[in-house]
Length: 314
Image (tube, rainbow, N blue to C red; front, side, top):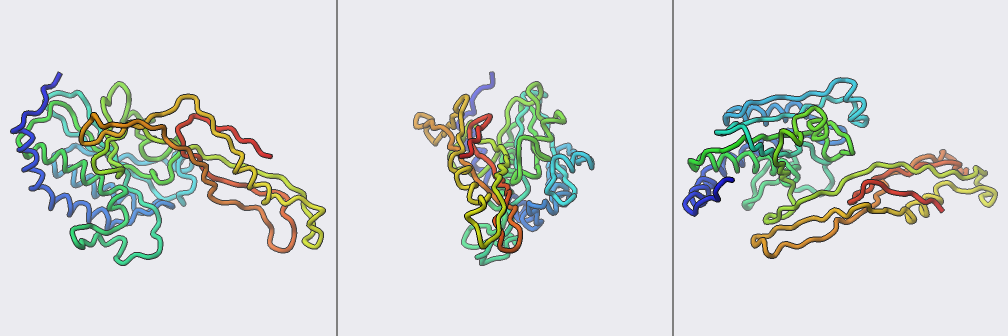
């Protein structure tokens, strides 16, 4: 069992942290300036290469993981056929194990209205970096890389192996995906190889959470009866059936997943069940014109601590 850090070692790490801040900021700005909007998944190879080259300069061995055409079709059906590239860097210590794997996603959601700066400019203003992904979560990738670098530059030697991964498609993930899921399926992250995984998502500055909500995508098809717009009473509007379908969806939990919040004082940690949500995202099926639609589909996802859900349509 490893001995805890001594007070002088902690102080050395804190001093070292100040020496890497400028490098971390520049690294983050470079990532922000590579638009990786998902959907559809733009700029992945360029961003993966940028991360990999930085890891290589810091002494990591680097591997790029590309998807085959068949994997693209299966794992990224809404990705417009764009290439997907993940990157993994390994930094061995004095022993091969334990293996500590840091994981972050490089994709960002589309840009909405109201930006006062270039969303892909990485501008610094009043001590803050502005840009899509500065928080979620290119900032996490920069933090995880340079946290390890601060430890090394403080003169401490790693006892095991550190791995860093930058992955795609977190924003459109499902049970299987082209990013972290692919790394698991291909054996880069496994129970026998990987001892710990830290995902640097931007929850709160002083919280560490054990556990995460999953996502299950589903589609509900409602069936009505078509009729002319002048006699709607003769038909059954399939769109109107979507509302009870959504409101009466029942989510059943097999085992509640507890999220642990570790504050600055671990004695203040609290436990709470993860919340569940049904989020219909779009519907389609109505024909142009003045007729009552016969069928329509409601698509969406549950974000919940459950392994299955039950749909009941009234």
